[in-house]
Length: 122
Image (cartoon, rainbow, N blue to C red; front, side, top):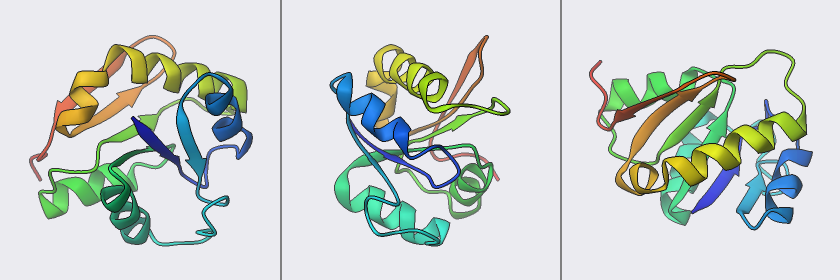
């Protein structure tokens, strides 16, 4: 599964994930600094990639548009560093691989993961 790391997460997260065998790119590496959520979503759909973010806006966009893709993983951890972000994302990518391929919105923190199938209800 490819994953695009949103700007709010540390750029080094993408490199950490690549070091662990994940096809990951940060939006800065994609020359998408400051891109709108819609632009990032369109790129993720085109690349068949999931999005990782700290931002609730992506889930809101999925609900508003009744989208069935891309899968979005929202990390709900304050003051997150790239290692913790990478560890959480790696766990989600391993534990929810089948769900991610089907289209889901995932919220995750240090203790639990919530998975909701797309499309989301408004």
